[in-house]
Amino acid sequence: MSDPKVERQRSRGRAQGAKGHGRRVLGLILVLGVGALGAFLWLRASRPETSFRGAGQARSEAEALKGRWIRPDGGYILEIKQIAGDGKIEATYFNPNPIHVSRAEAVREGQVTRLFVELRDTGYPGATYTMAYDPGTQTLKGVYFQPALAQSFDVVFFRMQEEKR
Image (cartoon, rainbow, N blue to C red; front, side, top):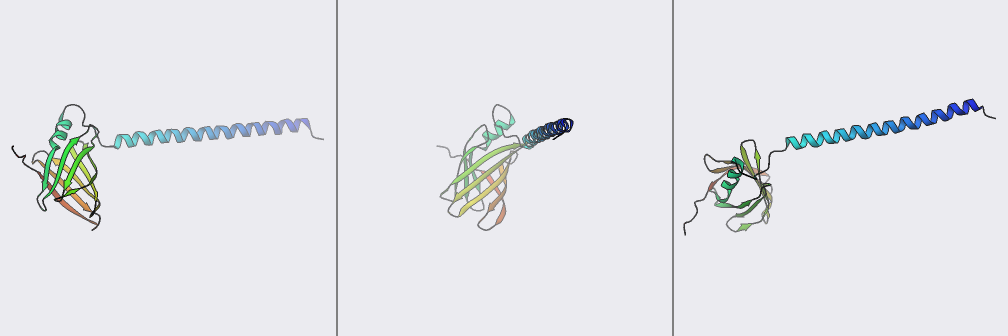
């Protein structure tokens, strides 16, 4: 036969063990939640400003990017037709025939407007341009990466003069 006093102590020990386990799980959930929130806030703060909405220098530079740009070392043409408020760009690329632009976007990093253009077509398996707009010289300067050759090249695009009709 068991002693009722011993049974009460065992029962109390099991209940306290269950409470302790629940507290540990709750504490772990709390720590993970705070960590996830901190990571989210840190990543959000470290992202470059991407908005081109509204007035001001960012919007006027976005508008200045519109038009046709030529890379004189090969006659390649980048045409920027439209820039959305979130930085997405509607663009076409010619060499001299059209090459599919799979992704194009502009971001604002401090005082610099940067462009990223990705080409996916025959002979262009994910080739990219990463450039910065220089309003003083009216140029796009940066790097062209050609994955088929695994090489990067410094490039510059100049604004093309619009034809008068």
